[in-house]
Length: 121
Image 1: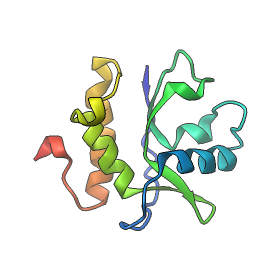
Image 2: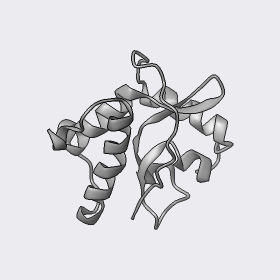
Image 3: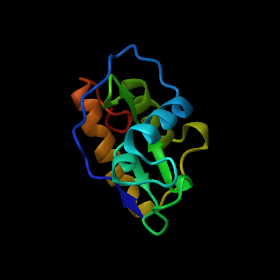
Image 4: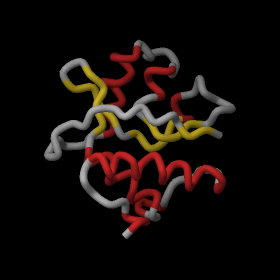
């Protein structure tokens, strides 16, 4: 199981609406990952199953969309992922040993947004 490497992607506008399904379509096209996920596709997610990296269903906690041809982290997506890590929407099924690394990854984007992660409040 794997937490993706922090890429320090630029942030989208704070008021940008988050639509995970639409973002996934944009990211697949941008990454050239229509048939199977690749490294560029992985950058838009916080976690993936390293045992099955060629399966789209292995990727969880998407936080980025392609905006103006560039991959950007969407603040509403970071907040949604943070909520899921706190149990919203039934939480996320990831190995216990990955939870702190996922939270650390997300916390870096919260800080970049000038906010505090919910688990740090």
